[in-house]
Length: 359
Image (cartoon, rainbow, N blue to C red; front, side):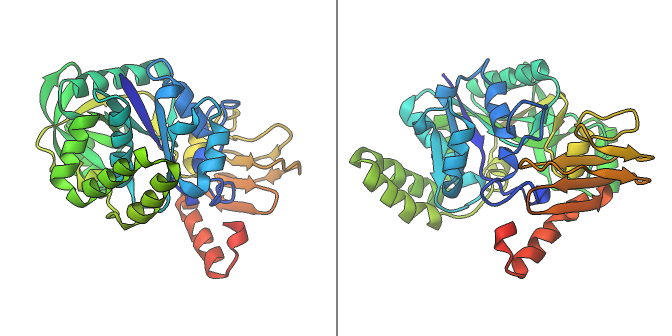
């Protein structure tokens, strides 16, 4: 049966002041209005393929309470609390081990919790193609057909066509220069790496044993402690997991596999990497402004105004364009959209000055 692993451990510093240590990006409502958090929308979106009882949510231990509250339909045993941040390879291996214990023939899809999808039907169709490819043997990923020479994403080069909408992966490519990204776009042989992975659980675990033996040994120790009960299982988890190598699934495993497939797709995807991308996917008025009701806009265009936490003050913009204005109960951010990636500098400055209450 198909199981889903949702990666929900990110900090989302580029969405400050709305995103905080205990309320990261995936717990914010940044997608469709009224759809709930990005995390809740992710789980709801895949229900035609995978119901909540076959969902595993991997998150930081300090986020377990908030994550559970965001997903009331996911059973308690569906949450994996990482006692330390060790990147994606250890948590995916842990989740694959849990899925394999529950179902030795499990097929697993690993999905980020903080992405936006415009065309759900095309999204589900792409996931189904990737699942069928993974069932046949190779670890599979979904690549997004690029529509611009973006330098903010990693790329995947397509190899030979495998059939069923899948292609052999020739290589992974790091975030390119603008010139190289233009070459990739023109070639038609590259897709964006969206961080989605599909595999038979046993295939993935065997690959981890071969390429990441230290992680494999640790995960096996964690699994072996489960029958001893929750107290002993928690003790072993807290002892073993923080010692595992911190490595991404891309670098630690995917780039090492001899057999790896990719399903190219297009379904209105965005990883929502900044407030600017939130503006791009928001509903906008005739002047390009995305703002809540009651905002006063005079000779203003292409601005984002966002409120979080019940703030009720009236925001007025006069004679400005291309701004991001984000308000919470205790902070206000104003910056031009082209500087949206620099929000992390604010977080760094606050931490350096000891203002942990704001991060």
